Image 1 (tube, rainbow, N blue to C red):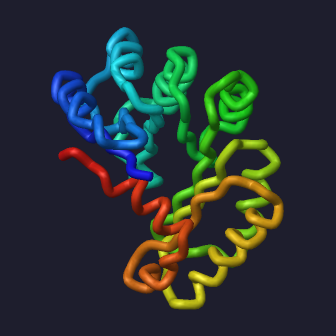
Image 2 (cartoon, one colour):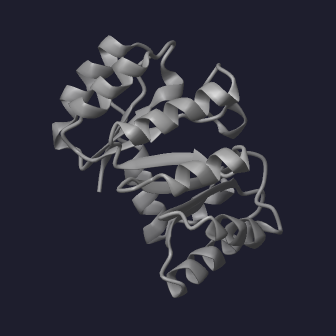
Length: 198
């Protein structure tokens, strides 16, 4: 399954890239790449997507580029929910009250609750998984940096647990040691994030 990741810096080019995404299975709109965003334009972009659309507005401390404040970032995701996005990707580190509100109001939108650690794979990563699971998202996404080959096994154990619990999961390690974790789940995630049209 291939997602076309829209990383344009302005609305006009984003619309052009959406039109190019006919061969993709999914379209991911990365709002954090846009220099500015009007709510009416967000509605238009979501509606222009002929394929299922994931809306992401990634925080800077989790590898994103959003420059506004947290309330503004969450508001854009909330509006994307109202505008009929098929998936919303929201960070577990978001304000828990707002996070729970978005999940509660999801209706037909599937929720991806994600955790990105760009420095390490914590020893308590299983606790992170359990805490995210309590929020009852449709998909749990965990991406960590591997500082050793053994870090990959922490992620493998999460995937094994999620599969046993029949919970949707995307989980893998990044970095030179993370190349070891080339499981079907990593390949799935790789396909979902290597289709950038830029």
